[in-house]
Length: 266
Ligand code: 5RP
Image (cartoon, rainbow, N blue to C red; front, side, top):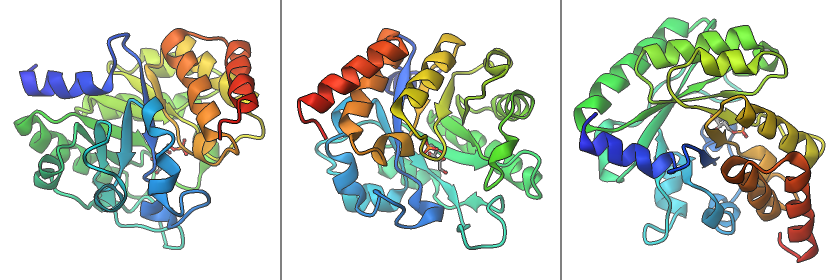
């Protein structure tokens, strides 16, 4: 692997082999979704606890101070909306030249395996990898399910993650699942990071699935709504960070969360 690629990857995956990415890209199809109405204000207190930010070029330029940032994973796919016909009908929205101009450490795009637009999104991934390899930029593939959240079982997730890695993704973002998540990780030869999906009922639910996923081999998180839609997002970041980087148990994470809450952390 060339120096540039290695250097960028090491900005994302920390020396312990783990990572905690903070995604705030949701507006690219959801618009000003709850608690991400003003992305700059949402992320400011959370930034110190994230290893990288996953976002679009628009929010990056408008809402993130270039003098005080974290490594950037630039979302480069889109072209659909929650009120449109089909969320899987995504294309590439942002050039690799833009990613270089913005000093991105990686780019990210969604693939929709099993959807009407499976082939197009997979070919887009191949093309993006081709171009990014030329410049030493890692690609994170997002195994997206659109509105069909019930698709998230081990068989489907393993299939999607493996295809993403085969096409050249250097990191794959997927969902945790209760049964067989280890098979998802084992079948994917590059680091797997977990998203959270819609906000869970309790923080303990989040700590438990994150802990389970990490113990089964996930490299870390790309987890958004369960952090920034929570009433105590900083306390959530600190607790989750301990699970990712210190192998804290769900109970230890809850103690960290409660302690931060008691101290009055948002
Ligand atoms: C949105 C995304 C998000 O980055 C990903 O789903 C993680 O966010 P969350 O934890 O809120 O699901 O790709 O399209």
